[in-house]
Length: 507
Image 1 (cartoon, one colour):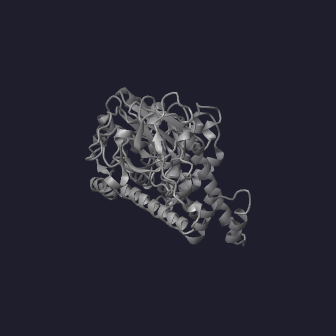
Image 2: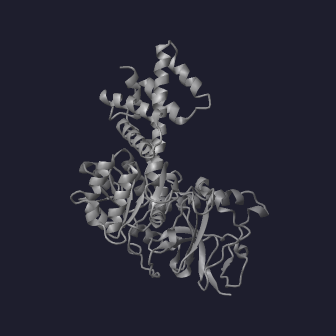
Image 3: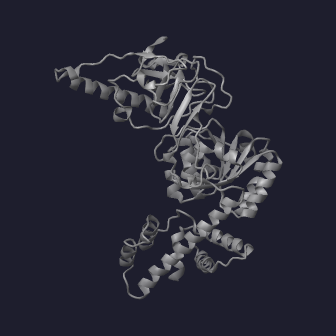
């Protein structure tokens, strides 16, 4: 059996694929995870991430001996957070050692690390690698943050050689899928786990609960473009950048790009330029006309589409618009996905949107880390147009519900009842929800700062009613709600929150 100088428990710098060297700790692999065939490697947990991977011996260096060198090379914020996490870990370990030494008994003695055994192909039980004195990492390791993508090249000055990477699949993530099994679309992402072995010498094992809320996403190496920095788009782009994605932005009002440029985004001069520069281009605009103009207009997306380029339409539009856009994108050899989102500005900022996707399944998979950055869950609904239909139905229900709540509040007032008591009772019953509580409190406080524009929910009601007409299906509740929103728009409430529909009842 061959041995190496590094051992379980040693802190190291690990080089994984195209990513820069990152601080980690050699740990024992899961019992049922075999070493990649024919490769001498260690199983490493990276600090500041949820990533574990088999790393080849030649891609590992001792942490302390190379710390100064690595810090000079890499200046990113999340890299520094990872280094800080190592230092915190060392302080905790030193404190435990001092406390242990003070006890003066055999339990306080330090057990020396044992050499790491390199397993051959026929070795089956990797648990033999675990040092009995090694405590489970979850008890003592720092809280994970996020690994930052520090460059598209092979390590920003990092000189260790590494195997060429064709598609850098180390950090491949996966989402909910209706095709996996009948109930999978309702299964939380946190219940899923996948192990992937690559020809580059590393095997990445990651839980898929990688949402912006827990900061454990490793970004795709694909270049991302984003068009439209409104209430929803701004939060989405912010989370993509926070999670280390390389993003090029464009907005009709160019000044809105400035903040994101400061956060590390690149600037695209036109939609066509963004689409031509990026592998995957997302758009999130206000309505069907804006969505069409963005693609088909002067210097539009279509001019930048080449075979293999991906376009993801996140705007809430009608199915007919989606069909048209899908056809023109694919006619140029592009790949198309629709992915409208359910949520609000606050949920967008928090990375907790719900994503409804339909169209090219391979694009859906390529967007995995992006969807995990912007949302808490995603659904793949089949052919293009299905996500638009589902989103319009959801927004039709939400808009009608908000109008009904506003009607109840005003009727309570008109009949001499306390609006606050009405809300308190409502929030103790079966209809209790964060949505009801927040919207009603905003109404009572006269706060109609937009979290989701009233004009947009009215647009969605109109499109849903039209969709019902085409299906010869009645939508009388939506039609009634639509009239209330139209009145609110006539009272100059278009750019206020949807809760401003309340004002339609008091004027």
